Length: 310
Image 1 (cartoon, rainbow, N blue to C red):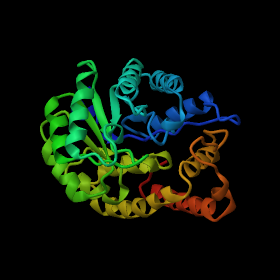
Image 2 (cartoon, one colour; image 1 turned 30 degrees about the horizontal axis):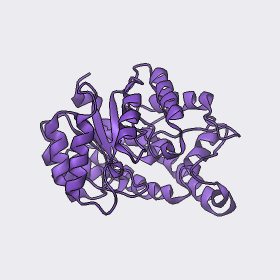
Image 3 (cartoon, rainbow, N blue to C red; image 1 turned 90 degrees about the horizontal axis):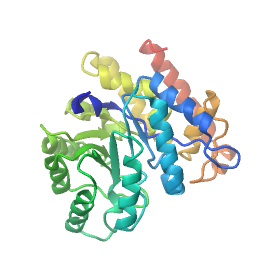
Image 4 (cartoon, one colour; image 1 turned 60 degrees about the horizontal axis):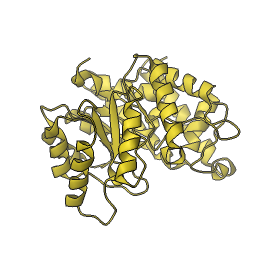
């Protein structure tokens, strides 16, 4: 499969299911992989923030990614991060380990490459250094992860990644259409693809040439994002209506995520629990949050009926 096809479309940021002891629930994880693929997604993003990667050991992360690659079994490509360390030498070890799991690209976390107070020049130097320490046959990507702080890529960094020929994938969290348009111009004609994580700018970014979507709400209704990415040009009226729904529905991310998404996975039979390592579930079940999320899901079923989706 060419890069043009491989790194486009919908890429869910995968959840990690846990059992009652907060250990990885492998049976539920297998169901989750199959569910994503049955929904029509184009690829999987494993060991990311939604996977609670900062709360996994390096050994757990490697086992998790290897399991996902084996379960996907070539049906869709898999990229993965697990790039959580602060020190360069440990980062190199982590990224080598993930590459050894058979992923299509290894994803760097932008905030691991500089401290919050560091300027963009320091970030770019560190990016060049880390890239040079990784084997040239490893495809790479970058994720603007918002935890522990969000570091957006400068235009210079995007240009360097595009021109290096090493980078295939940016999970873009800038939430700015104008910034996305600049980035699209910088990567044009290269291997580097931009996946927008922001539902509110998604349709406009697709019209501008953005390559796809990689955001948290693909953990709830991936088939709606798949439809939008594949049909926005041919069916613009329905695409606009769907985009309006997805923009509002994405606000549900504020309802104790990833608890809310895991609770949904429990409701459809994929997960045994909604337990997380990254946060407790108390406020989700003791307030209006669960009922609000369920109402959002119900409206999503109406959108699926409108689009004649199963």
